[in-house]
Image 1 (cartoon, one colour):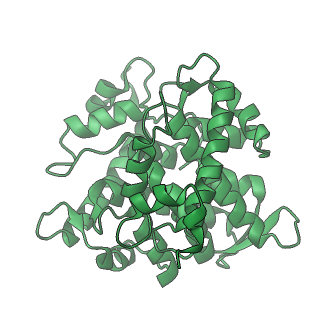
Image 2 (cartoon, each protein chain N blue to C red):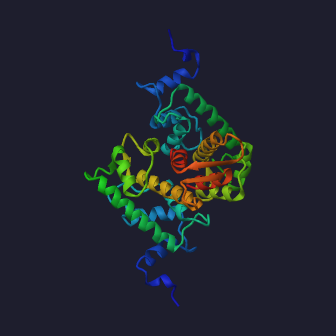
Length: 173
Length: 173
């Protein structure tokens, strides 16, 4: 019998890149995103950004991605691309730092002016934010927020971290 | 009167790269580290690694580095380079993932096997850890550990983070 995913239109592209081991690593993902034209007129994703994309969904820490994670990633990437293009109306390939607050709000994040400033300082190049860095920022913010929420079981907006758990949550991305 | 740093042998190299504003940004730092031959036979630092080097010491979030931070950075970099070379005995420019535990221990970090595994997954390329990624890993680990310790005033090995403070501590690097 064919695998349950065989009817899925994305199954073919997944198997084409996953190779022998049936999983996608960062190099394979970078090639796939470049060749499929996902980034369009924007510069291709850096290997670093692809590594944290995998880490975002790699809940078993294998460093690779199966088919369901592959689809989950594409859903997230499409959302971020739409969001980015909404702010990059002149198709310069960049958004302005002052638009980051609105961009993050649109995605449901609420951060203080101080955190926003730290994010902008980290992800701008020459005063502008490129698509690759924008996605890297979104990957990190999503992963950190998920890690936080999963521990904030009483939804109090505060989490007590042991040192090693803090390192585990933050060093993988 | 000359500035108090004028007698310092590093003052000349600092002023040469800091330019008009008297501070060093990520692009200037990358140029400086490449031209000064700091990385030697290793590949030059990526711009991303230089950005987090600055963020590590940029406690006022300006995205730039003054002279005292510049010297503090060089002290840290020299330590990490010595440490890396101790493990890269065949001068391949890489260390083996299984040596990371010892390398981190030498620097005084104690992490669980699970965290170590997450770190190795994040920072290896094709199963080896290059100098640039090694330094990026050290920069992050140092910054996260410092941020944690500064809040762990009772030295209990546990810190309660509000969401926004958690984001501030982790998104800047």
